[in-house]
Image (cartoon, rainbow, N blue to C red; front, side, top):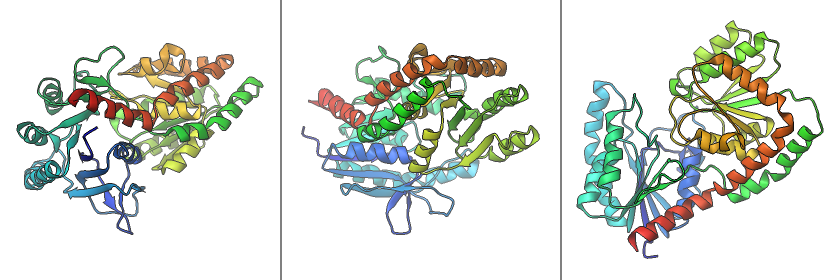
Length: 387
C-alpha cells in the first residue's frame, strides 16, 4: 500500500503529563489511534491540549511513531465561547497545512467544529482522506444542525471512505459499517479464565446477589437517573443488589442526593473516573451491564461488557437490538416505563439457566470487535477506495 504517513484531526482533548508525555482521559481513543498508527510508518495527531490537573485520570501514548501538533481547546454554547472558536481558526488552518504537508492521507473524525472548515480545506486541496462519523448516523429530533450538515457533506462530497455506526446491510458506496472497540485480541484472551469461572458458578446453581455496572459521563443523555429510579423501585420490593456507576460529570451531586434520600447509599456506589485497569476490575466483579442513553451512536460499553462476560441490558436506541442479537447476547428495554425496566431485571434473573449461552454468545461477538480488526478494516477500506 502506498500510504505510509497518516495525519489525524480530532477534537479529543489531550494533556502533557508530568513527564511531558502526551496523554488523554479518553483511554479508548488512545488505544484505537495506536492500533491505527500500527498500519502506518509515521502518524501525526492534531488535537486540542489543555492544562493537566490532579483530578484527571489519563493514560499516555506509548507508540514511538506517533507525534502531536497541539491545538487550543475551545468549545461551548456561550457568546464568549463562540468568540474563542473564531480566534482558533488561524491555529486550525496552520494544523491543516501541516497535516497536508506531512501525510499521504488524512483521517478526519466527525462530528466536531475542527473538521467542518477542515472538510473544505482538504476537499479543495484534493487531499487523500478517510473519516469516521462517531455520532448517531440516523437523524434525530434534537440533533444540532451542524451534525446534520457534516453527515450531508460526508454522504455527498467527501472524497474517501467513511466509517459510520450503521446497522448491518445499510452500507452504501463509500459509507461502511464500523464500531468503536476498546480491547485487543490479547485482552480478550486474558478474560477467558474468569469468564469460564463465572459460567461455572452460574451453572452450579449458586445464589446470585446480582452486581450491576453502568459506565458513562454523568450527563442527561446518559440517563443514569432512569436506572436509579428502577433500582429505587426494586429496593422498595426488598430486592438485593449492588450497582456501580462509573463516570463523572455535572449530575454527580444530584445522584448522590437521590441515593441519600431514598436509602440507596449502601447499594449504589458512585465510582467516579477510573483508569483502564480499574474499570476492568469492576467489570470482572459485575454480572450485568445496564445502559439507558436517550441517543447513542455506537455503544462501546456493551462490547466491553461482552469481553468480560457481563450481560448487557440496554435502552432500545441505535444499534442496541442488533448488538444484543435480539436476546441471544443481551436484552433491550424501552425508555419511558421505569416499572418495565424493573420487571425486566427480575425476569432476567429468573432465566439463570439461559445466562451461560448468553455470555458465550457475547464473548464470540466481542472477539470480532477487537482493536486489530478495527484498524485492519480501515486499512482495507482505504486500499479498496484509492487503489
